[in-house]
Image (cartoon, rainbow, N blue to C red):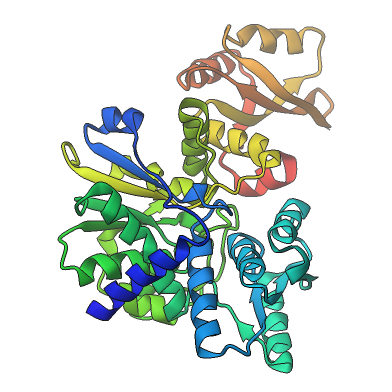
Length: 414
């Protein structure tokens, strides 16, 4: 085990050829809110705005030592791992083939190409990631290339442990608690293994998105399992199956140490960090901050939250705002059955309060001779305004149905 600690320190030293330590910052806003010492390990500030660069670099570095003739690397990724590998290919001057699903947003393709330049080839194939992964591995075997795994690799895990090495150096001691986002488990495996190797008594909490709880499923089953369905909103942590190596590194964890973050609630944290602190976080990068209220009594304790990435496409900001408003109860959608008579719409509008704003109004169809169905979206400043509005609708005999939480109807109508 001591070898792991020394190897992680060596990996951290080697990383200085690429970038300086990412900041470990005490956050006054969060510290005051929770009465604790809340520190953010800012992995969103690496050159590729994600910790993934660490593991990719370490794995590529060690492969070039063990097999200097290997000049071709392959990965399958639509996000941070792709950008990390591209950056490393250019640094080492080796060729890389990066397989991405056809549906990958152009912004991610362009960023990956910018990091890798002439050293990388981007291959768009497959409508779904499983198809992309299969194509990448087949191509890799055919060309004799080295497949660079995103998390289920000992050298990648060792590279991610550099987060803990820096954290200890910067804080000058072990924190009382570290909060870690979990996707495939590489970051959590590296950080926990390093601190355990040193014999530190730090507590750990792990965070997964509700729609991609692969660690929760693995701990429950006693082995990694394939999730039947994954919500891809938290794209940096929505992994259908925990790795074999990462499970071995994390199987000691108790299920009550794993917290699940609802996707819509993560949006609330993203907006708050952006508007209050000026910190841009991607959904996965906001997860550790999102669960601070669920850590129990942390008053007076030193808690480090790893903000794992900041690759956020601002074209998604309207969706993030929408989801945050719906989660906090500041925006609702409902179908209103409006009488087909003069003045009916005015009667409804008169029920709205001074803080209520019509954000969506769509006539759906005339459902009966004397009534029509209308899709209404209302934004307000206080969540308690909606019970007041619905009370007025009931009092005046308006028929309506709140569809805000109806995923099926929302998908087709909203």
